[in-house]
Length: 184
Ligand code: IMP
Image 1 (cartoon, protein in one colour):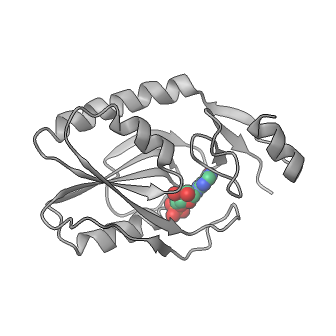
Image 2: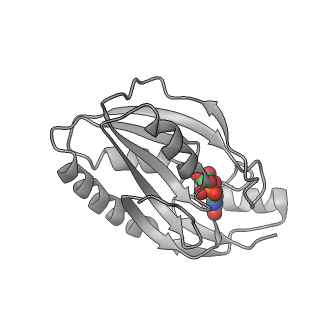
């Protein structure tokens, strides 16, 4: 049984429409990888992936980057199983790398309200990296942030999306394409 039909059976819901097909995602990540490779030549950046949603994006992105890098992860939560942000960020797993004086690139799956990247910007700046940049596969147009997201895969409308690492209630991360869902 496919992930979609299993999910529909469990919840009575189903993802609605394809928003981004795997080929589009792959092509855009190749462009992002090439751009980041140019910008970080000889810098040996530390990539910090934001779990869980980034796991497929970061795996594809790093294979499009032709340079030495280290990779670490943080795990945050702001959502629980709801489709709306709780407004509170909790750290479940912190980084293990000393980023003082390092070139840091934070890798997000999606910037929704902007709370998570805002939280990380503040928290990581204090550790005095040589530079701090952000890459996100998706950015919703409603996001409120007072700093630059340096690399953006796709700007998308304010819809709840699933697939390619993004979940609903921890399911559907394994869909290879990105779908919109109806809000409850
Ligand atoms: P923000 O802090 O509101 O920007 O939300 C960031 C996090 O919320 C992301 O890293 C995702 O884990 C989750 N999230 C936000 N929007 C969506 C969505 O449309 N689908 C699935 N997860 C989402």
